Length: 281
Image 1 (cartoon, rainbow, N blue to C red):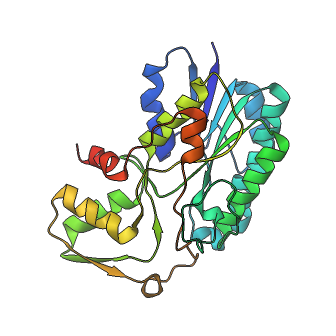
Image 2: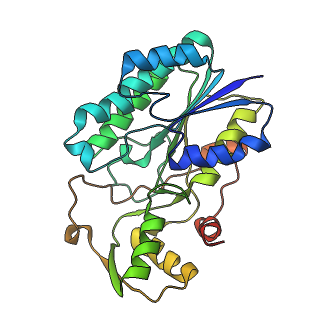
């Protein structure tokens, strides 16, 4: 029985993968939180991997505090770059299948059309720089890796935009949301299912693949959809990013082209609103 190690088990994606465990009993699942897989202590991480001895690694663990990363650069790079390097080396040495999660923040947002996997990278913030360094290390140390770039992840689990909007729209009469950052949300349950489809595929094809739900929207549009589906009375106003400054700069446009993952792995990608509805069921 193949053993799957899921890092970042308590995160949004790790939690969604845990829901799939019963549907795939042919695997022995190991869900590792920060204590069981310590991404900020590389020596300990190496020992933990040797102890668990996985056949498959789904690396969902990451440092994702985008704004805090501007002042916590060392830990961001340790978790998002150096730990990925350790995991990739382990995977290559032990012939382990590795799926690693990355981000649209590797782009600078200056494009005006959906970005494919070959689009030029140019991160605007430390988080994006650390994730890009992780991508490069992952493919260098283990060219057989699959890297999934995703964006605007939300779920019933953890902290995310959807849950924040749900709370604020019930607490306040009016809120403002930026309307000049464009991309597409990703329902973590859909991404988790895509990972399993890749894992179950007869033809393991390594490389970078994009995955987000279909639809080109702004955060403001996203908020309006949440308002509609939740039946909230809150007034939602669109504002420019300049009116809501953050420590880390965000890409203005990071819509991902999903053609490659559809063609290579026959992954079906739902329209964002169809997936968003599931949060309200």
